[in-house]
Amino acid sequence: MTTPTSVSPDFQGTVIQDSSPTTPQAILLRVPVAEDAADLHQLVTDCPPLDPNSLYCNLLHCSHFSGTSVAAVLRDDQGKENLVGFISGYIPPSQPDTLFVWQVAVSQKARGQRLAARMLDSILERPICSAVRYIDTTITPGNQASWGLFESWARQHDAPTSSRVHFERERHFRGLHDDEHLMRIGPFEMAAESAT
Image (cartoon, one colour):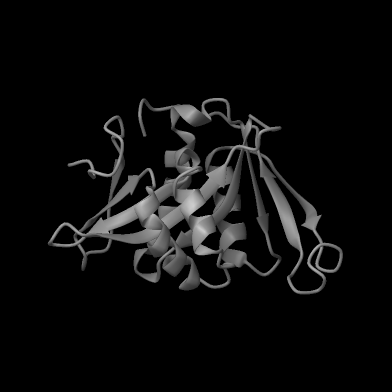
């Protein structure tokens, strides 16, 4: 496997084989770079019910928060990378033992392969997350895909979960957005890898 030239030389990445018999390709999980931001913006737009962020916000996900985010790409025959998945996350300054997962996006063509769970594992296995024992994320009541992802991940890692309303429709969103429930997973233990 060759490392993309725009990624730091110490990055090793993770390759996941596509399980679909009709597409014998490999999905590469890697640290995002600023050049991924426009593709991330389009991916989120193509993945309702996710809330699109500004392109500038996506640039920050791919640069300032790249160490706690992940890009999943498919390479075509010419070596061009196509973004098929992304998790944006960060470690809140007041909670160094917690990874806050901001957004999970998986393109339609990459679904059904447990890609979201594998992307989450790849972030948590990085040295930057060695102190992380909890995942926090906010989910709207109707986003069954996200509830399913995080509940399944928690079961796989034998981690307890809890949830409560965190941001309220009327109080915080002035009626323009559904309630956001804070889901907490943990404590759990992850084995950090050397450079992913």
